[in-house]
Length: 170
Image 1 (cartoon, one colour):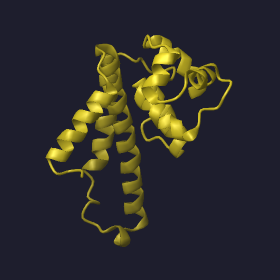
Image 2 (image 1 turned 180 degrees about the vertical axis):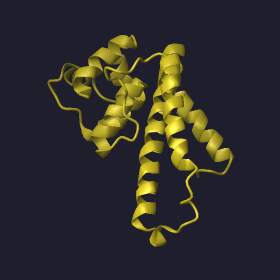
Image 3 (image 1 turned 90 degrees about the vertical axis):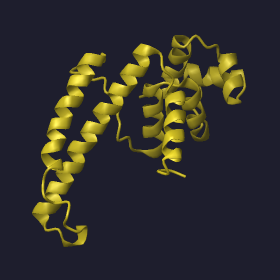
Image 4 (image 1 turned 30 degrees about the vertical axis):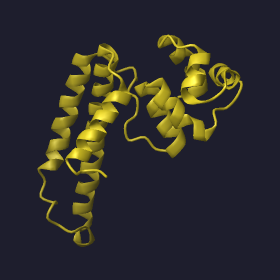
């Protein structure tokens, strides 16, 4: 995903001007313009600010991939994906069934340093299947947010408050 090419498109989609967005994230409009038209590479330290300001799952995932080099939740937009709620829900159900095959295996009680190669391979397969399930679930959430106009920033803030109140994060 090329963020610099998509920044201008996303600003248009959200009805934001470059000047409004520049003010929102603390950069000048000429810098935003250069990023939006692709004439300047977006500074690494600006990418998280832009991702929060854009409030777009697709942009967020692209930024995570570029910044960290990994993305356990890729933006699913391949030829075999329909980005509607019903289709994404069916994909989640499929991935959940596949992950549950490994969830129910009997490797949980074996300490990692005592696992043999067969057990390690089962755990590796579980991680793969469970990662696919999580990616599908995250994409379903994104589609729901897109369709209903929910803000990813607000969802994230609510989640953080909930997890803090439950003592699960500091």
